[in-house]
Image (cartoon, rainbow, N blue to C red):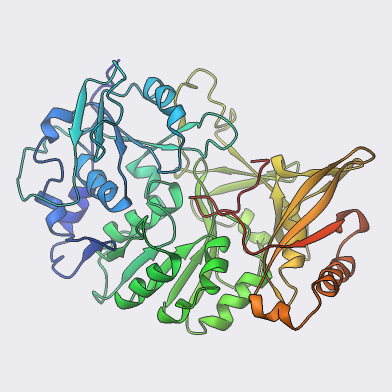
Length: 469
């Protein structure tokens, strides 16, 4: 079924065209660089945009640089763009194709998706722009389809528009021509897409990570490009601060989102980058961007709930609910019941809050609670305490099944450096971390065991891998 053509007020190329002089702005990764100006008239699909006009197009690329080229080229041309992230298991491709009514696949992988009879158009794309104009008239209000993680089953397909995705971004010219954005996120996920769009809408440059480079190599390259604004999850930043090249960047703005920003990571960043403005923001794929906090304190002032421009928030059963024009409209395939929003248009984020001394603190996800003999433990709350220990870099709290109380709390802990443990008996250090927890937590929240581990798994979205998610 074809969607009717809508009046369309803007697209990425329209926005770039309106910027005027873009001679100094660029998009780059470890292997390629393209001028922002060339995105207006260039083609990375060799001028085959007309073939995709009005179709539902799935974009599957091996790197995010190529994905960025496709987003600029197809917004306003396709009726729907489906961003297939690199970590999404291929077993979910058939259901994504069916739900999104995919007519065409654009990919730099020659054989990708060709076994699905529903898909009639296969268009190759590359990492180079060919300056070949074609008619970009008769534009559509393209739907942008983002996939949820898919870690606990088939992903949900979240429907956004250019307007909802950019609602939190102030349009404007890069004031001094020297703003360079970068991010640990992948732009095929909501957090990274926000940074990509922010760079485009302000005419700034953007430095992307590459799948074949390490964190250390990415930070070194970001330093070479003199990145001024950089974002990531707290887990991204904990890993970055352990890198020997963390001192090669000198950003003026650091932004955290996607996970709870606790006191330990905010304090560490403030110490390591004393000249940076550090903000932690709340946003989700479904609810959109809600607010950011810049006072270098975990949590947020309670007044933000009722006093955030263009955002309506409320708390029900400790969960944060949000209504705004920045939220997604629906899940694809769920049009009849629309479980994404309630009857009033609010989105339940599933993030739980606790009010203490006039400030709300995120304590964890509703689906992540550990039940210890009928008492609820939020892993993130315990992690925030462990992470304050002077010898801890990061931690992951998880459950271990127990026949008596149902579950026990255990913690996996990464130390700040391997050498620090050499001066201490590991057993004594584990006991010291437990004493640290007992001083700050109720007894049922204290881990039954602490395991010192060399590293923790971090997903492609930059979050600690939690097996309940």
